[in-house]
Every structure is written in structure tokens, then in C-alpha cells.
Length: 115
Length: 108
Image (cartoon, rainbow over all chains, first blue to last red):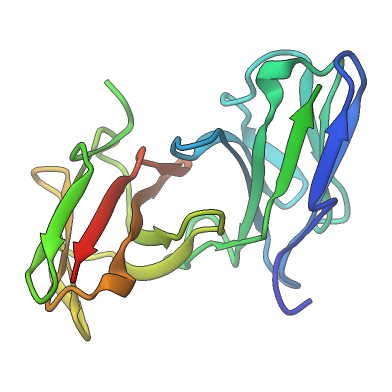
């Protein structure tokens, strides 16, 4: 695609429900990154993929968070039993590779609100 | 110690002045360095990338990298009110990490 696409753009969910956030990277980009940004804060690293593998998932806040990537393309971030502190904007970015000098391009984010 | 640290803001400069943004990083193996700009409510967008020690200029923007000191900076010359945004330093080593950002306000 022309850019990184994230869906949904907004999600309101009840506390305790599970949510799935989707990221469709730029075609041909093998590296994919997930970040979380709370209001007025910086980008908190969650996980990155190189192809379908996740070499670094150290940023996932708890075992309620998981992510997968299939076919080296679309990635899904799943949050189980959502809590109010999970409310934030979840940003996805992709780059041509992780190891070369290429920039990462961001999607428009998913704004998650847990009520 | 945070992996990527930026000078605390907010930073306010008058229109036409030079704005100086600084960033240090902890991973000596880091290879690529980026400056992103984020307007309120929007996603980050790339301004500059730098991979080698020294300066890199692009229009009003100059990025400086010193790997020995693990230091990256961004200078914005002739600052404009439209430059008012949060500036994020990003470092690619193992994954890609961002600093907390520095909020810049350029006053007319």
C-alpha cells in the first residue's frame, strides 16, 4: 500500500474485554514496530518484528499484551482483559529493514479508550 | 538510565532564532539516528536521518552526530511558528527506540 495503515482508528471498549489492533505496513517493508503513546508522553516501545519473528518483545507491559505477524506483512496487537491504564494511542511503523539505514514510517495510530 | 534521553523542555524561541535540540543514547552499537517531528494529535514524521559522525544539513535543519560521545543534536535555523511541535529523537540499534521528546514553541 501507499502508507502504513492501522485499524480501527478509534476503539472504545469496556474494561475486561479483549481488543485487537491491526497494522498493515508498507508493501515490501520487512521491519515493523509497535509503540504506545499516552497523552502528552513520548513513544513507549512495545515490540518489533523482522519478517515474522519478534527479536525484541521486551517492551510489552504485561502478559496481557501479545503480537503476531503473518506472511511478513500484517501485524496484530492483542490486549486481553483491558484495563483503564491501557488507554492510549497505539502507533505502528514499518521500515524497509531493521539493519540498514532506512527510516521508519508511521501509521495514523489507533486511539484506544477503555471505559 | 533511559536508552534515549532528550533535553527536557519545553523550549521556547522567538521567530527567526536558532532552536537547539539534544539527544543522548546508551547503546554504543546503535547505527542509525533520526529526528521526527510530531504535531499535536498527529503521528511522527521524519525530518532528518544521520548515520555518520559529523553534520548533515537539509534546508534550515542540521543534524549532528558524535558516536564517541553518544550524542545527536538537531539545529533549526530561522525558526518559524510552523516549527512549533514536539521533536523526537530515535535511535536504531536493536529495535528502534525513541526519546520522550522536546516540545518546541516558536513565538512570532
